[in-house]
Length: 199
Ligand SMILES: N[C@@H](CCC(=O)N[C@@H](CS)C(=O)NCC(=O)O)C(=O)O
Image (tube, rainbow, N blue to C red; front, side, top):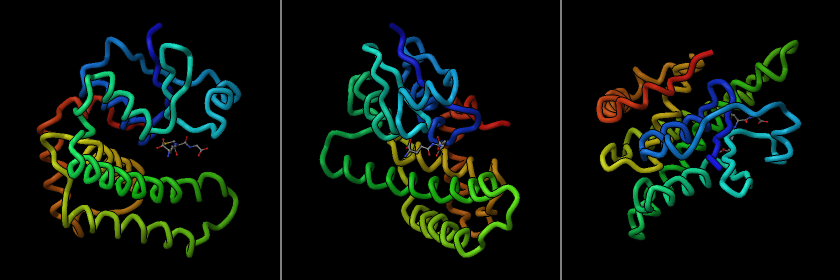
């Protein structure tokens, strides 16, 4: 059975998976698609979030961190998650920071989406923007490696282009180091552009 990565629309967490599949040369083994409907997604993942990866025995793996770990194992291991202890926890820490930036950015999006008829609650938005801004500052001080690429760099690239896509925060004037980093990332990994988010 071919494995299937399920995601929806411009999901930035899903993009971590689609990019990793291409980067690791797993496109022949893993299809990418959308869940049939909300109910079927809830059966696969009680949290009803994407991405979810349906593996050979029909089990759905989630969340994106677990999926990237599985993809790394499929590719032979030690590819995007280093084995050596120092490098491993450095990469996992960067990945956790990138995911936290993404979570903050998503919650800013959701404040508008799930409170459509109400005034957005600015203190909550500022609270999330603070996490995004401090996370980006920490990344600008010590950006993840682009080559060899690990889960930290994948997460940061997906986070930056998601913030761009939603036009929710003009991070470029504040963090020129990240502008250069993202340019270098796209130059080194041109396949990243194939999963660029669109509505
Ligand atoms: N920690 C999760 C976050 C996944 C997530 O928030 N996915 C979003 C789309 S990018 C989602 O499904 N949101 C719907 C919801 O929160 O119910 C991961 O790393 O996969």
